[in-house]
Image (cartoon, rainbow, N blue to C red; front, top):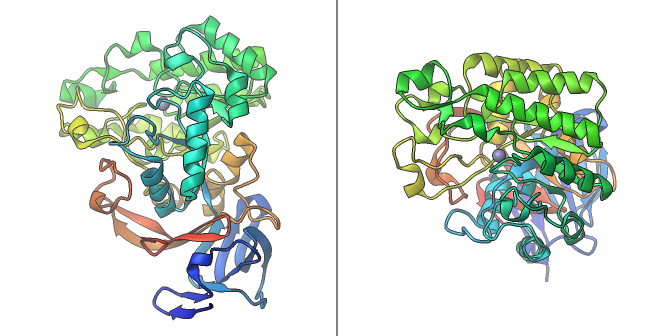
Length: 454
Ligand SMILES: [Zn+2]
């Protein structure tokens, strides 16, 4: 049976039953949108035709017949975004987030692929947990979920995980994110092991001896609030340590959530030396906000790395402009309300970012003219795909049809009650952002459209 419906308000025409999905020769045509695909150097009005879940054509005025047509007039069509640092909390803390709610939050943000951090319960340090995440994501069939395994058993920093086993089970990288591997000898062995099985190492850079119970960036604001600070040196030293070990071992190293001027300098120098095995990301909050968000003991602004002072933010933006940074991420870290409604010192670190990251990038980096839209978008599409070595993040013919459609002019006020994520904390709550996902397509299937999951 075939149905034909047109919803002129949403710009979506549907021919055929929605339930049938797009397998078996199904076609989707996105018309009249402004296509921005940094990898293929496309930045102009094009139509995009999708067949059998892959990109079939990107050209002017495609007249092929399609079962579903999306009119993207006035909108921007991009590769689906890839977020390399996401905490989905499942298994173990389904009260905070599940693979399902996290995936829906991703879809609402135009994100079609996420890299899941291994600090779940039990820790993803073995085949069983990795396979569970892969299987659950497959059942849900919402976004592409790439699991990571931990560097050390239980993320305890004592014994190495079976990196080869993690890789065979489907992990795309190893990381002890949430903490850092403090023992340099162990970290060096981990990198040597990772190198032998060509596994990516992702490091959360923190020198615990220097953190000294700090709860926010150490500076004028922490003094003002009378809160113990985390010195920028905590991160700087760990970044240097990781870079030197990666240069020595030749392992592929990706530096997570860099936030300090010192980290920018270290990464810049390493790249200048020609260290091609080292990549680095910045979380969007670290170029958007400063530690002044913590004023009033605002626990929504508590995270690790902490929001830094203005001089660090300037250095981060300068590094982005100079091409030192490879990817933008969220470090999406949902918590239950009772863990955030606490005195600042005791509150949990982290907030939810999947539904705001595109808008934060657009509002704080593109709108003020720091970088071009295509340049910034590259850090959320092809940039991460290249590091992860996955065939996504671009709209080449034959590539999986992961596509996002954005209204880059849409102004909206962040309201936690509208989050699909179970986490309701964000320093962006109440702020006006510009740019919002209208439609998100994964593997050729429209999964999210105008505020609704399909
Ligand atoms: Zn981290």
